[in-house]
Length: 99
Image (tube, rainbow, N blue to C red; front, side, top):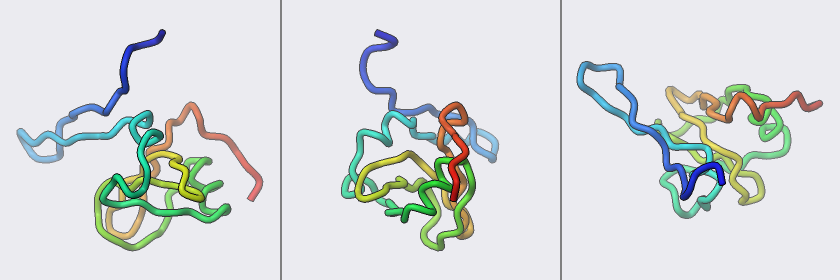
């Protein structure tokens, strides 16, 4: 066993002095359904391949953490800021897929 339980995430320093923010773990994202989070996006195949490659996606909406899904299955996390979803898919899992 690598470690017991489910890793939820980590608390890291924010941009402002004394501010802390929560960064959810990839493992947590894979256990959740879209109905269990505040924001989720169901990607089409092309968007999903771009996400799995590590690219950012341009999808307008509310800022914050977004669960990325395809056909209702979770892929991982993204963080939306100013209409751009920054990719938080683990770098070690990213692969080049033909689009």
